[in-house]
Every structure is written in structure tokens, then in C-alpha cells.
Length: 470
Image (tube, rainbow, N blue to C red; front, side):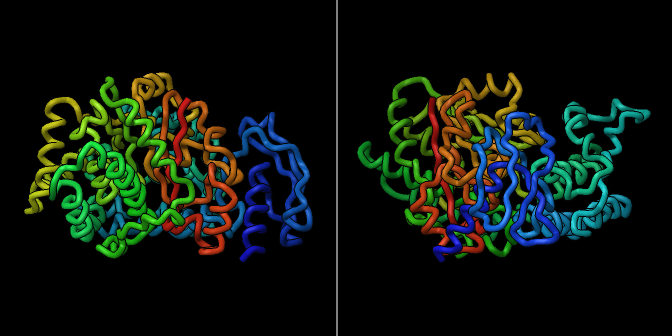
């Protein structure tokens, strides 16, 4: 196990220093390769022999991850296995799709499953020579320049972040979403919510089914709800099957050993310092269903017990990453809580609806939340919007990758080093579902890598609560 820990850490360090291509002649041999993404300040590295033979200056900003760079990495499995399955599930779950729409979705699946050798084509509505450019939305136009360099290349040649987002945009086009605005991910969203019913009732009864906590008890309740939000993030339909979301499937793992970095007490102390002052907490949402439910329970607590004046929820405009929350999913969840036939769920649902009517609970979407860029590159209006908040809660894997940078960081890189650009205090609640990770100490790494050497980075069984404030 110790040898596995050392090897994994060494490989992570290698990736942190540059974009490498695996030699076809010798396993474990890496060579210099041109870095295409504004990498003038990067240290160029050659590594040969053992992965520990790394001699180079630390990279200032490691490059974006690349599809198909190494068949052992998680992005390869995402591209060749998960994304074609997601595409075909759309056809299976939505019989209202026309024959042409279903065929267009299948075309995307076939492009991807050929080991990523399928050729990217431009979204038709974004073609520069289109005769009806007015059909393209502002969001589509904003993506045109980003995606253009990858048209005509193999999918495996695209940066992982760009490739994934390009996939979901291609699905929007294939299903002609802009003409009907139907959520083709709604069937699995509804199935997962039904399977999580008992877990939902357990949490609503714990929070609103008994006596109200005293002022002295509130901080500990808040800490536990932060952990609940963390483990709610495991429920991700673009990674796990719907059947995983039964009562057993969403069981919380609130053991300190499973939380690799736990800044929940720091978050509680910070929010406590704001009590009695004008304040707002923002959530950059991830998944709907059970995860959105845990976000709303935390929101209920923050507003009901006056830990903040206002909560702003940032959601997606369009179907995205299978289970990502849209505005309609928030409205549905509030109604769902009121209609479960459980008094504690009804209390939470009705109070949240009242907070919304009063303006204390708000939600909005912005094209940037679906953009193929990292948060460091947020536009001025988003920076100004988030700068008004006293705390931003970034939920989930994709938001984490965009927050810290979708890069092969050394896992022990301080969280502050990756997010110091952020305009306001931020906390990331994220269960590990991809190979991007920062802010973890050596002891935690050794423990999780010995517990689950193969899948600790991607299983969702381990997570982080990482906070930074200026």
C-alpha cells in the first residue's frame, strides 16, 4: 500500500509540471511536448525511468487536462464510456424525440466510443458561414471562439473541461432543445428523487421534526448540515446509476477519516462572526434531486435561524451534466417537500417558499455557469455579482474543477494557492469524482490511498470541505 501511495503521488507531481505524452516504446517514460495554452511561464520537463526521477522547476500554472493522454486516467473513461452511455440514455428515456433527433444523438455517441478518435464537428448553429446566424443564442455565440480550435480534431485531443462541455452543447443541438426547451434529463432526475425519499424524510425530521436547537446547539447543527451537503454531492447522475440512490445509496459517511480536508468548523466560525450584520450566502449549485435537497435544508437553517439575511442560488439555464439543477428543479423541489405527506418536510418546504416570497431566498442563472472556462476567467459582471456575497459555496465536482483549475495539481498544493483570485470568501463542498484535488495533507493522502488505492479519487466516497478567505 505504501508503494502505491508513493507511486501515485509521484505521478501526480509529474502531471503537475506539464502536458506529457506516454512513450509507445517504454512504459513509464515521458517526453517533452508542446504546450498549447498560454504556457510561456511553464517549466518544460523531461522524465525518464522511474516516476520519481523528476527534476524541474515547479510549474507556475499546470496545463489543462487532455482527453486520451493516458488510458488509465479518469477522463479517458469519461469520454469513451460514460458520455456515449449518457447520450444513448437520452434516446431511451425520451420517446418524444423525433427519429432525426435520436439519430443525431447516436452520432455523437459513436464519435466518442471509438477510443476518442471520432472527429469533432462544429455545432451547425455556430458555423461562421451560417445563413441564419440570428438563430444562435448569446450563450452559443460566446462559445464559438472557444470551441473553434478543436473542430476537425479528435475528441481525445480536446482539453477535458472543453470536451465535456462541448459534448453537452452538441446534445442541446442534436435534440433541438432551443425549439422546445424540454428537459431530456428529467426522467432520471425524477427516478433518483423517488429512490431517495426515505433519506429525505430522515433529514427533514432531524432538522424540523423536533424541538428547535438552542443558540448554543446551533453551531454543531450547522456543522452537521455542511457535512450533509458534502455527502449529498455524491448523488451525481452523470457518474452513478439511478439505483445507487436508494436509502442505502445516499447514506452519509460522516466520519472524519472520509473527509480529507474538513474546514466545516472554520465555516461555522466565520458565519458566526457575521450574525447580526447584513450578509448574503451564495450557492453555485451542482446536482438537483437529493443534493439540491440538502442544499435547501442548509439554506432553510441559515435563513430560519438568522445566520444570514439572504441566500442566492446559482443554477443552470439548460439541461447540463445530466442532473445539474435548473430553476424549474428548485421550484419542483419546494413543491415536492410540501407534498410528501410529512409534516417536517412540509415545514421546510413552506418556509423556503415564504423566504422566496419575501426576497430572502433567490435564484438566478447566468451563461457563465455553463461556460468552458475556469472561474479565474470569470467575466466582470459575475465577479461583481459574487463580490457582493459574504460567502460563496461552490458545490460539486465540475464547480471544483473550474474553481481550482482543471489541472493536474499536486494534491498537497494549498487551497489558497489555487483560489486566491476569488473575489470573496469561498468554500468548496466536493466529493472526489475526478483526478483534480488540492489542499490535502500527507496524512490524509496516505490514509485514503491505503483504504482504496484504485478509486479514492473518483469513487465519491471521500471528499473535502475547503475554505479560503482573503
